[in-house]
Amino acid sequence: MQDLDRRVAALAKTQHGHFSSEQLDAIGATRRTRRHRLDTGRWEGVHPNVFRLAGAPLTWESRVMAGCLTVEGSLASHLTAGHLWGLDTFGPVGIVDVLVPRHGRPRRRPGIRYHESLAFELRGETRRYGIPVTGIARTVLDVCASVDDDFRALAAVDETRRRSLATWDELWECLILHARRGRNGITRYRRVLDRRWGRSVPHNQFARLAERLFEDAGLPELTHEHQVTVAGHRYRIDLAYPDLKIAIELDGRGHETLFDEDPIRTNRLETAGWLVLRFTWRRLIEDPGGMVADVHLARRLRSGGR
Image 1 (tube, rainbow, N blue to C red):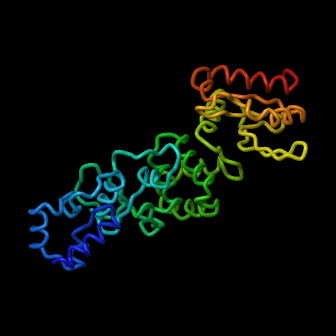
Image 2 (cartoon, one colour):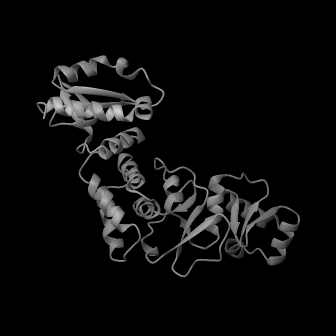
Image 3 (spheres, rainbow, N blue to C red):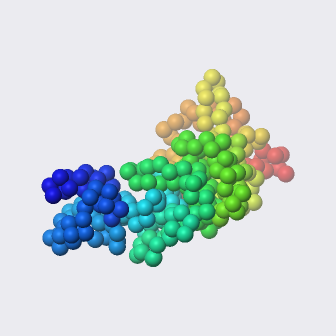
C-alpha cells in the first residue's frame, strides 16, 4: 500500500496534484483501494474519472490539468492553450478548452469545453508547465477559430513571431495541412498570416492598439519596428511611414515622462529629416481622436499639403 501511495504521489507531483482512473489502472490500484482513499479523505474526486491528492494546491493550471485527464490522450487547446503559451491578451480563461479525437467527446463536464478534431494527428502536442497542449502553430489556428475579430488573432500571430515561438514556414505549413480538411478558423488564419507575412510585428499591445486606431481612421498601413541608421547609430522606430520619414514613438503605461530620457535619439532622428510624433498610453486612452488628427496633419505636411 505504501508503495502504491508513493507511486500515486510521484505521478500527482508531475500533474499538478491530479491523476486519472486510467493511470491508477496502470499502476495497479484496485477499486477497493480507490474507494478507501476517497472515503478516508486522502484523495478527492474532481471529475468522474479524475482525482486529486488532498491538500494539493488548487490553481488555474491544476484545473486545466484535471480537464485534460478527463479523456485519455487529450490536451489543452484554443484560448486555454493561448494562455499556456503566454500569448499577449490571452489571460487565464474561465472555461477550460480541451481537444479530443473525433468521437472522443465525453458527457458534459462543468467548466470544460471539448473540441472534437478531425485532424487530431496534427495537434503538434507538447507540454507547457507540465500540461499537455497543442503546438504553437495549431494553437494560433485554433485561436483564429475562437475569437470574433481579427485583432486578437493578429495578437496571437504577433506574439508567436515576436518571441520566435514558430517560424513563418511552420505557420504556413499549419495552414496548408489543415486547409484541406476545411478547418474552422482557416479563413481568418490565412488573412492574418497574409497581413503580417514579410513584415515586422508590433512589439506590444500598445502598438497593436495604435495600429488599429489609425487603420480604423482610414490612414495608410504603417510599418512596425522600422530600423534606421542615423549618424552611425542604429535605431528602431515603433511605427513609421518610411516614405514620408514620419516616425511614431509610443511610450507605455507608467512612463509618462515620455522621451525626455532619450533626447539624443530624438534629436538625431529629427536632424536626419524625420518628423517624430510622440504618444503616451494616456493620450491613447483620453484623446485617440487627437492622435489621429496629428498623424493626418503630419502626412499632409510631408506630402506637400495634399
